[in-house]
Image (cartoon, helix red, strand yellow):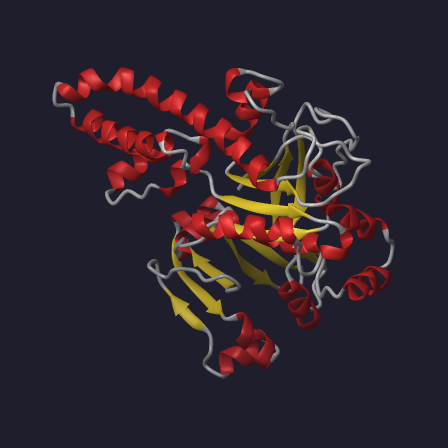
Length: 366
């Protein structure tokens, strides 16, 4: 399930430093614009303490965590929608992602140049929002020119698409992102999805702060939090340079000691990866046996046969039933056999909606 989160932002806000922490694929980090030209892609593991707890019980040959892809995209400048800087390349790379991690500089440092000379995360956010909105308007107006005549002639699909385009155009003309528009009918939802607009992608705002602000944030990040709340978007605070220092420590104990000194229970990188996974609307079911304890990725809301198909297409085609153990029950009773004896194993059919953390065993016949 190759879904991608794209890390975006103005030049020199800490995108590549953050990417370095997230992935073993190392992006160059330097103090000048357009250091990142081609997008760097890293496959990152999703931290999941449940796998470790299960492995302590099952003693498997290996643990296989879930993964997702993170893409470090070239920095944007004002005018990108018209091709300024690396605009066309940047916007094309964003179009290929499924969600956006928008990094905003929320720290002062005279040694790191800001492309606009001063620190103002709200202005920086609006620059990128505006460029994405302008590109979406360009897409919408092009589509409208093609579909208006067909819609006027009474074509049902064309009329649906035109309604969607007009709804998007109305909010974009107001300087808002297209993701605020909601459609009721499935036909409209499908038409909206097929437009692949940049500002319909879910977004997480990441405030890159100094080390002293890693726990509570600062005046810059508070402003971003207020704007994000108005949009209904998520926001988190992270000190990317500090996270880079933590990542370079060799032992788990040293990393935990560093985090404790900062007053943090978990690294910002771990929190960010989990949020990115959630931003992509992904969840995890687990298989646990002597060979391996493995996390399997599925879309939130999927039913048992679809999740069976994640393991193998034959499992979905010949699906009979799913045997389901809740993670808490497995931990409480200490083994699959004990869960069965306690009557806590669920036998579920084709309509069962899989829940995050379910431990699954599929019965099938092909």
